[in-house]
Image (cartoon, rainbow, N blue to C red; front, side):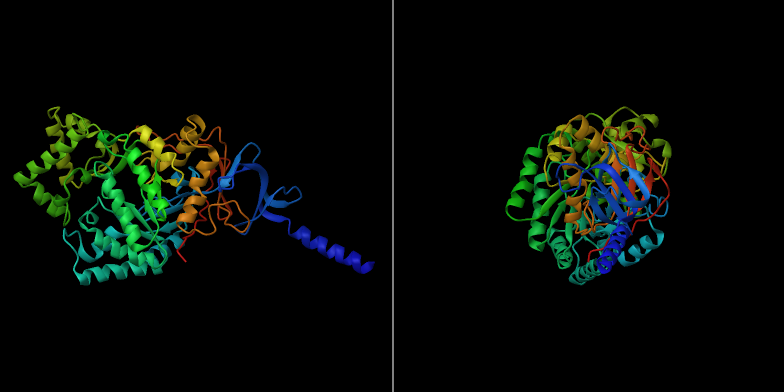
Length: 520
């Protein structure tokens, strides 16, 4: 009898010890990231991991969060970001954290650090508030070997680029990215991209592409991305899937079936999207590619040539005519270092500020002059909301900001850098009911984790990293607008990153618990 009693006391003590957590989230509506319906329950977190879920009435914890009436979900994973250059200026990553993002994938559109081993060491020593994974970017690899030359690589140069991609993958890159509208990626032939993508494929990487055209030639551009995936035998992610230009509105009826059919054929292809009708990129994308090679001095020299200047102007005016517009009202300055008073103004408005004629030709000259002064970051208005909704309904589509870490009050950036996820949850889930809440959460969590092989992220599951968001589905809201972009999203009451409370009662507490996530 004494032996039985002793065994009971020992086992009871062990069981009791097992009921202690660092953080206990109680009474929440748990959406686990799988797409399944929510269930009421509790979540116990210890040592950065989710250690138990369910009804945990007798558990104890150092910190208890009452999530009554709130949604509890995995932390959101933003698969398309550009955080390089902003980490040291804004390591708290508040623009992401307040939007529910706990992990970012950077290195998109062909732009990344080439030496990712060094980059990951820097990130680990700096410690951001979000986790960071990175692709290796084609444009920067090409620049490292060939500069911005407008030509095919030699075989020796090709081998050097392959070696750089291999090293980046060995250092932990999750894949290989291209930006085929940007210099110098736009000068590359498909065969070059296939060879470099195949190197990443050997390390189980993803091919993520800002395709060669998102407007008139979008079908051909999508087909090129699919071809590269097939030839390199690797998964494909098509970035910021869209239709640019008023003349292309409605063509999602053509583009989405391309993805559906490729998946039916067995190609692991997915897409991502930001929930806005404006894009954001460089002013240089308005100019013909051949003018932009070999650096700023070469660009200025070409534009100083009257014949080339006339040709560039004619090129831009033809593009404007295709859009069925009379003025360059759709490009709006986000950041112009030469004169920050231009920020927030359209090219049409900037031209008038200069006292010039209210003509498209005069506006084209204004664009050329801004390029001579170093160019500008821009917001381009030119997508249809019906296409945005049609693309959003596609189930293998993730949400992504295509944004940097926003430095508060700096420039006039696209609002997607502050409000992407909150906008989906508020506008497209709660108000317009384009997709259900559980489906939106799946697209923000388990789908990106699966795609980029972030093996212990994206689900509320025992043993997984405790990246968790707690939010009010009725109050979550994006506040950032095109006119007043520097406004954080609201509604996220608690955010945990690797089991560390980072947002408490809707306030960032300064915690920086993010880590690098590497391809293993």
